[in-house]
Amino acid sequence: MRHHSVIEWERNLKRALDRIDGYLEQEYGDLYPLHPARAEDGETSNKAHDGLFSVLGDYTTGFGSKHGEGYIVEVRMVTLKDVPDDIRAKIENDVASRLPEELKKVFPDRHLEVKREGKVFKIVGDLGLGDL
Image 1 (tube, one colour):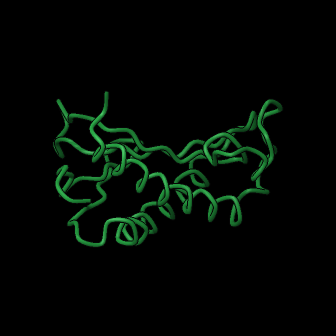
Image 2: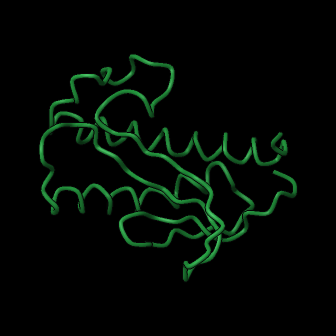
């Protein structure tokens, strides 16, 4: 059983990540063909399951991390084509610049930061389960 505050937090985070996913689809969605088993953008009820992009957030306790606990944000491109590092970096940097703005929309009263951690981003800061 999960605490209702965690469920609400993750629902809000998903709204922010889905908006970023939608932006990526609009901006870069035609760069590469979809994986043959992947639905076109907008054809499923979950943005993580269709289109070229899947922007996901998962909680981590942060053991072994210099940033501690937070939510890891990963950007996946679902294609069989090789995506060059420079294109991937451009897309990831675009996500990193948009993520703080989207977080402010869904968590206006929280101090959150986006940090780079290897190949992913991490949302750190006021993750408390208080009033959401």
